[in-house]
Length: 183
Image 1 (cartoon, one colour):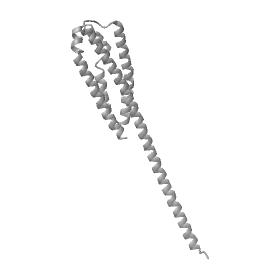
Image 2 (image 1 turned 90 degrees about the vertical axis):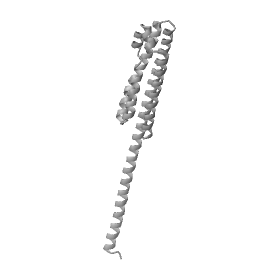
Image 3 (image 1 turned 30 degrees about the vertical axis):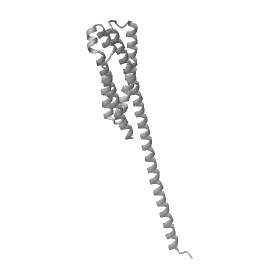
Image 4 (image 1 turned 120 degrees about the horizontal axis):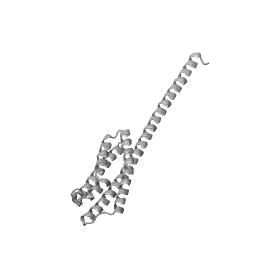
């Protein structure tokens, strides 16, 4: 015959087993949920960093396109000519593309600050400042004075400018890659 003590003993064992199972299930569910959230945050951070990289690449493309056109204009001036109005218009178009790309850079800067990537942000700001050296208005003003144009925009100075842009871009992408690897 089953005694009341055996019934209590069995009830305690079953209850304790259920309590342990419930606590373990809760702990595992919480752990799984937290890992899933971390994984989603990492994926979102990677997507943001990729969009920053895409924006910077578009900006770099617009800047190098503008630099190439300035180099072309300098060649015209060095050959004794003067850029035509249509060439100034084309240069202004390059400038407009660069301004559009600048909007994306501002967004990229905000994303980097949001993600806490201060080093990448600082390098992007420096790169942005390097790019802003050339502008259509500045070039148009200097084209009116050939001596000033030749001093400021010689083939050598444009090659140096190109190297500065490449170095700035490379430094930024190295920093961004480090941030990407940390996710």
